[in-house]
Amino acid sequence: MDELWLPEGHHWDLHIEHKPLPDAGPFTGGGWKLVWHTTESQWMAVDAMWNVLRDKDAAPHFIIGGRQGRDHPVVIQCIALNRAARALAHPSGPETNRANAIQVEICGRAAQSHLWSDGDYETLANLSELIMHRVDIPNKAPRDFSNPRRYTGGGWVQAKGHVGHSMCPGNDHWDPGRFREGTLVNLIDKVPDGGYPLSGGIA
Image 1 (cartoon, one colour):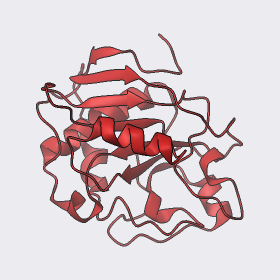
Image 2 (cartoon, rainbow, N blue to C red):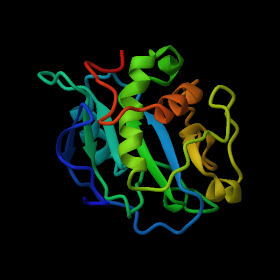
Image 3 (cartoon, one colour):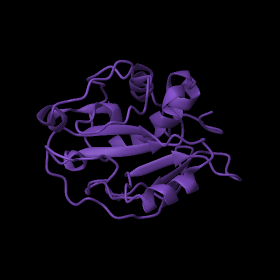
């Protein structure tokens, strides 16, 4: 099993592809964290958002969304899991991207994340489990996404588990909004062998 790239093809009811983009270099240490973003787009925009993030030089490790003609969610992996992504700003303080942060861009809108169904969160649980098979990210959420507070620089480095762009120091984005982190953690704890059966994607 390749520890740095998810397997291409249909796995855990996800269609997985590799479309590499420039990374931010090696990780510099800290707690392993899974950083959730929203693209502020519709779900059926995975290819358009890959183009946007490429042009902004702001690639995450993964983009998850929909594609016309595909019945299952599409996951595009842009960066290997031993290299840092580029989706966080770091104007001062620690290099936010390099602080052991694995980053996922969800094709969706922050203002709607609290309205996503459990089925929508099962999609994210499947992807999380595939990532967490390869990276030792604890399945916990150290802060409440509904009332996010930005970490200090040192706090960001040490944070472990599921965090949001809204919690990152030196950043002004509020995505992924009132993300239901408790639902996600519970679904990951109960994910069946081979993942949850999926169809469609986030509304």
